[in-house]
Image 1 (cartoon, one colour):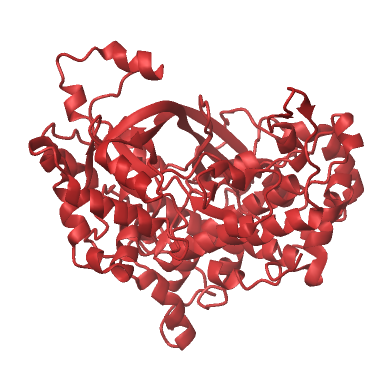
Image 2 (tube, rainbow, N blue to C red; image 1 turned 180 degrees about the vertical axis):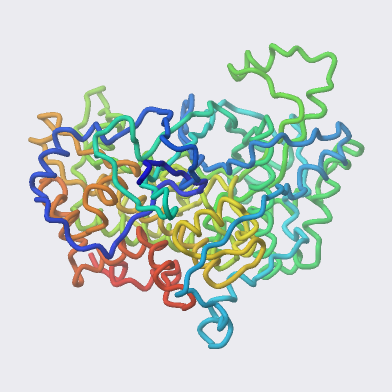
Length: 629
């Protein structure tokens, strides 16, 4: 006797489990293409459905809290939030020193004991018996210093004296995404058989979503006073980005983001700058707020901050993430009895800040994310304001650069630098755990940060790729402490003991980032390099859905992990023929790269106990990046 059941599990990546080693499906790809082409919107979204189980027994397979949208004027970004971060956090003291201390403490969650699975093929006893294993394990054994040599976690800015807010940019929210797995359970022996429900059955969705609303507000600001004057005199940007984290969930995001980024920045500063290594930057940063309040002089920390900005913006220094500069302390504003609360609303058109919120100050890298860039070049060209001649006549836009030049910019610039950014994190014992198009920023070495996302951009030396939204980042070595991580690992038959870091647990933690990045890469290639002719554009041609959810359903459910069938599907779309040809070059090097990325978790599963896994550093050696125009 069998019983139909459904399962789901907490996880922190957008895409569900895929399999790359299944045999080719007998279904005709042309039939699939025609069906998907005409019914593509059916795969673009699912509504939230509450499943009624025929049995009361079930377990999690995957729940993701992934960023969405929100009411934005000039920015659309996203991040992933751990479901256990929804626990109520403790109130912070009103005293300044207590606030500083509480904001930088590591938030820890209690975890329940986790069950283990028995697998005769699993053997991790020879973890450190060979040199390759030891070399691989060094990544997760790296320890970032607990001392913040950059000083960013200790620096407090004053509103009005150090910083002014220029405009409200937008808000961030998140979607709780649940991936479902269905199985038949044999009531006699308790065994289970995973089954695939009817593809279009609305009562058995593979993925459901629930939105949180806005939890983080984003503002554009700038440094003012003597600091601003000195920055400009040295050719540095005085613009900054500020995020307001309010509410229990957002507070934990802020703490995680500050902890992860300050640790990476501190480690880099310690190794590369003598003054930082001596503790000078940290010392001046810790006294900035008090000295500004009492003496109105912050010259010493101004110099340290300017050196910090110069260091982070040096093209020779690899900082592929939006750097934190400090926190904004609003004590003076919140406790000013003479201040009119409506003044904030009149100036910025949004409600004033909430008490106990955390404001983090970042370097300004612009608002152009891969979400903005992941659209056909002709569509981005249509969004460029028209140029006018001396008599006010509209000048026709210049033709787009040749396809090969644009492809080189996307592959050797956007994609390669994004993978290098992930490699830098992983080499620092950090996993991002919220990779998506909205968490990757296209910035520029110049003041105009929008030039990198221009449809005419083809010079990779002008491009700077930045990772953002580190609210769910953490140490690779700490991953086994996370109950959700252990559940995800068990779904791939990887036995992870609570708090016990192994080669397999480290590999799986990094593989989750690579898995998410793979679908980002696929979406960017199929959109930014889509070859839409003027005739197609005149007919208002629209590409099939290319968001991560749609792509994972195509590759995972329709084509069952078979990239050959997926390639045939893409070839049927005229706009993607050149993209397929690019991926075919060098004996299919592009497809091999996508396979290693999208199925990174499966590769860890199939290579348990060995070092034969795909790391970001290893994938950077792909022939796909070794190309010429």
